[in-house]
Length: 341
Image 1 (cartoon, helix red, strand yellow):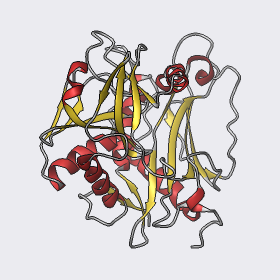
Image 2 (image 1 turned 120 degrees about the horizontal axis):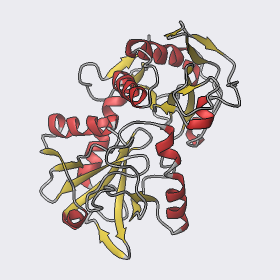
Image 3 (image 1 turned 60 degrees about the vertical axis):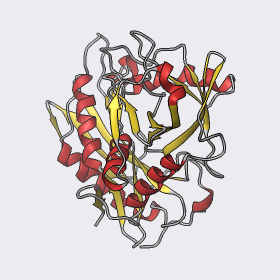
Image 4 (image 1 turned 45 degrees about the horizontal axis):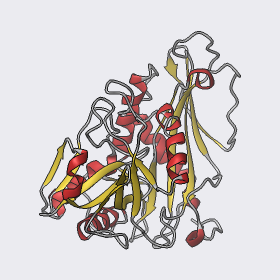
């Protein structure tokens, strides 16, 4: 199969229209069979539930070309499960998890010419999403929904190399204790936009959100989970019911324990103990791990020993191991890589 004529090495992290997308409609209490289409336009009522009451959820995942030339995607069953959880929380119909994986595979296969070649540093980003599509004027769930998947080739998240981030402790709250912080809903990201724009204007790369109840415990950023390394090499991630259960974080914790022999711990992480860690990173689909060099708490700087020049040694090893698995350089645990036939 011939690849598209794209300058893969100079791709940014943005939207490039590909040839096909998957669409399935929910009507009269059931999902239709779904289809592939070349039409990238979504036409809905001006009163659609998604436009009036933000009834929309989504996922983010990637497809890769491995070292031996296969096209694979990473743990799509976990994305299917997480999207099902998101749908239940927003009173939306669950798109069956097996069909979710099948649709992802179909969409990648149809756009195989856009999957960047091995070694280019680029990947194919996959965005499954669902929204309320019929007119809703009273505050209630929609009756009809659309589930769609589109793809776009993207370049490496850090163009020109990885530089550790400077993060501020935010005065804004990301999620309420019994709210929707643990699901991947558009509304959670909409409310974070002002905070991230404000952070950038103040010279910071990202926000560190604390728990809304006590404002003493670390939660996450607007779009990634935290990962910390202790001075004796233990990998620690914050535990909270109001943060998104990152698939990348879950995978990194497994890699740390099973591949690197490190001790791992998921627990409450308090703001006043950050000074005791040796490394810090943000983990998510886009960059896998983004190193953090410094956290600023209202003028007080917390600088990690790993510094502002590169990833810390443990973070680097975690990054290399997980990306090695994704790219087929290291043997993957059973079920982690879904091969696109």
